[in-house]
Image: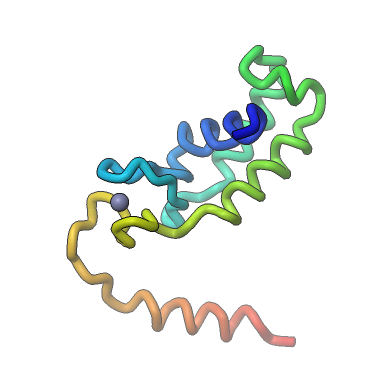
Length: 109
Ligand SMILES: [Zn+2]
């Protein structure tokens, strides 16, 4: 994996936007967490010239682009167990209806 990609993933992990399945060590995207915090941290690190993000020197857009690509391609849960970590077998109620409503109200054109 590319070093830059690793940095983007680590930032997402730090802000808990990406999580790791404790069983399979697979990355997944937690959509309960606002990804804005990951972008804010990424921009802050680049602007403060942290050695950690030196590969993105003065180019926070490259990092935020990579971050958004990383989040977009991450699965919504561990691909091995197909469940977000920690939820066990508890079913979610009402999630689908809410999403359908959101999709409908979001598309007015
Ligand atoms: Zn798993």
